[in-house]
Every structure is written in structure tokens, then in C-alpha cells.
Image (cartoon, rainbow, N blue to C red; front, top):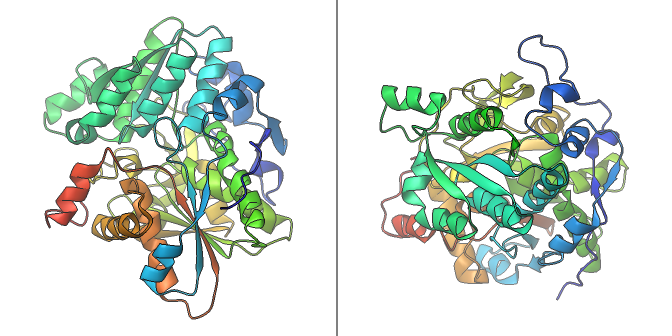
Length: 427
């Protein structure tokens, strides 16, 4: 049993340690750096401040830490049986975020965002969700802080993942398939293609459109932005200390799945902190789906975070704001861009991208379930697959850390499709 660590008292802001500052977000009209006033219609004041923060650590308010105490610290697990099945000399550790109330890492930022909106007097939030993990996390957090919530769920996931929708509704939120007839963006897209699978970029546009049109309503984003990445660093801070408690000086390599990028950044940035301060040589692999490979095949440039162009321009790896990926089962990875802060660390050479198709991901997910007993979320199975491929090729011991961002117990129809041989590589 690896000794648990205290819940972090601060979030870690990698901006303070990077040798080159990240590019600013730009106003889409003026192409000048966005100001707090530009973001005030969407976000509460504290989140706006965190978006541009430069201090190394930001204190976590006590109400958020109290909420975290429900499931944090999350366990770091030595995957002995998985190691044996792979026939590897590696020591594999898994940072497991599936112990949160909704079963994923998303709750780390959901609680923070709901809290900051509540102290600003916001009574309603809108948001998007892909697989439904972010939607259910924010629904949980909004119930805790007495905030109404409307969720636009990507149509492909809305149709294939009904239990995520049921979970969101159990916490008291409303769920709409995206694109929907409730917004101008949705109506236009449905007129063009009534059977569109949708995308996270579309769902973001719909949620922002409603937030901008209703009084006392704000928007909450589940990934990509700097403040979301910041909140997730509780994952990596715990993992660094837990690894030391396990007798390991450092990780040789860290694998995490990457869709919008907050999960991987939250795990990896504290490990990269050790590299930046000369205490480690850890490599980080961002594992993305072959159906939506923004790091490995996208361009690094300014782009909108949504289809309609409501968001600021973000400097990121992107496949283009109008890119609609195949409806793979890892709905949380179907995003056209990558978090600007994570993209920046890729450009600086601290993170490398790798694309995995979903058949490889589910094969690894099944092997992990049969050896370790945990059914990984399809998103996290991509990271497990890449780590397994790497571990099998080793001839001497290395320390591998895998981010297991959530469990897959509401994704069993997708696992059954794989077991039945009905799963395509990219759709």
C-alpha cells in the first residue's frame, strides 16, 4: 500500500517556471490580448484572474479543499499484475481519478468553478460535455453550491451514452443533445445535417450562446483554459509525492490521454516542474485518438475554441474549429484543439504527442481490467495502450506513471462492441 499524501493546499501554476511565457489569448475582433473585461460576461472574477496568473502557487480556498476531501488524495497504484501480463521490467504506477463521486478527474475543476461562481452570486451555469464526465462533474458541483445547470452533450455521446445523461439529471441538471434546436448555432447545423454526430466545438458554442443571452448566467468550460489546467494540478502534485513514498526518486516517463488537455496537464505539469528545477529527466507523452490527432497532425496557431467563434483566439495545436471527428467511443477526446498551456509545453519540448486508434485502446483497457480489476474509461485506455506498447519494448527497469482519468463502468456498451468485434478503428 503506497502511503497517501495530504491534499494539496495550493494549485501549481507552471507559467511561473517556464523559460518562455505562453502566448496570450487574443480578442477575436481586435486581435489584441484579451482583458478581464472581455471575459466578464462568461466567467467569475477569480477564474478570470487565474486565467492570466503568473504566481507559482495559488491557494485553494477551504470550501474547495473540504469538497476535495470526499475523494482526495486519489490513490497511486502499483500495477503488479499488469506488469506481469506485459512481461516488462518496468515498474508501472497508475494515478487513479476514478474514485471521485462521478468517477473522473473532472470533479477537481468542477467544484472550484461552481464555488467561484457561487461567491459571485451566479445562479445558473451552462456548459458542454462529450462523454458526459464533465457534465456529470459540474452537475455534482452545482448541486453542492445550489446553482442551476444546463448541459449540451455532443449528439454522438448523447445517443450512445445514456447513463452519463441519467447521472447528470440525477444531480439535477438539464441535458440537451448538441446540436440542438434551442440555439441559433444548433438550428443552423441541424438544417444542414439532421444526423450530425456533433462535436465539442459545437456544444461549446451552444452553451456560450445561451450564457451570453441570459441574465445572471455564466459559462463553465471543462478543459482547455488555463484556470481549468491549474485546478487539475492536484493530481500531479499528489502523484509526485506518492511516488516518493513508494521509494521511487522520479518517474522516467508519464503517459496521459489528451483531448482538451486538462487531465494530462494536471498530472504532468508537477512532474515537468521537477524537470524545470533540475530534479528529474521525466518525459511526458500526450496520447490522443487517431480520429482526432490535434498534436500529431494539427497546426500550432491561433484558433477559436468553438465552432461559432464566440471564444477568444487561443494559441494551440488545432485541427480547425470546424473539424468534426468520427464518433469514437472516447467522447471526451473528440476536441479539435489542445489546451494552450499544454500546446506550449509541446512546443518547448517537454511533452510529445502520440496517436492511438480506439481498437488498440480497448484492447489495452480489457487487459488492464482483467489484470488489475479496474475498467478504465475509453479515454484513459488510450494512455494505457501507449504505456503498454512502451513497456513491452523495455529491456531494463524504468518507472512509468499512467494517468487513469476515470472508470469505464458507464461505458460498457463500447467495451462490448470491442469484444463482439464490432468496433472500427476510428469510428
